[in-house]
Image 1 (tube, each protein chain N blue to C red):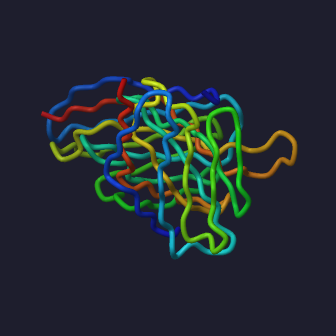
Image 2 (cartoon, rainbow over the protein chains, first blue to last red; image 1 turned 180 degrees about the horizontal axis):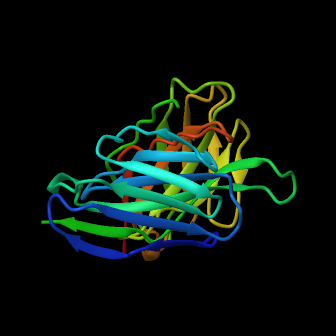
Length: 118
Length: 110
């Protein structure tokens, strides 16, 4: 599982409230990602990070912000949650080869955080 | 990243080989083909990847055409537990963005 932990795993909140999801990794990987997945659909990239304080937008970044103040934690924040942000959120890391120390490109995902915005 | 096209759904008989196609006609020379699968609502699981040569591991085989515009994931002896959504993506190994489409829902039937 590449040492990825997402928290909380389940959250119910009300429209307009702020929400922060946390992704924690224990293996010092450089690249981290946040995806969302809606019923019957594939994963859509929200934001990603390529190092401490280095982040960039994905395809569905509106309404979301991220922060990465240390290697092991990548935070996803919904400043003012809306019902359209009800989804399952997956964090992922891109693994580095222990042999060549280069990025293999393989993504390893957390178990997901299910967010419901009422 | 190049876009991929996969069939929406496929069926396979238990014990038979499952062949899942993927088209990636706009793939660049430095982009690899990756396959993942997602069982129920779990996080996607990495299966295999390749650049231009065929690849095999304990889970599956990956066949990439010579022009690299398409590929096939082969599960040699499908079991009921292989029922899942399978995603094909293309990306460079050290790039930031990885975009997933809707994948192929494979149903393995007894």
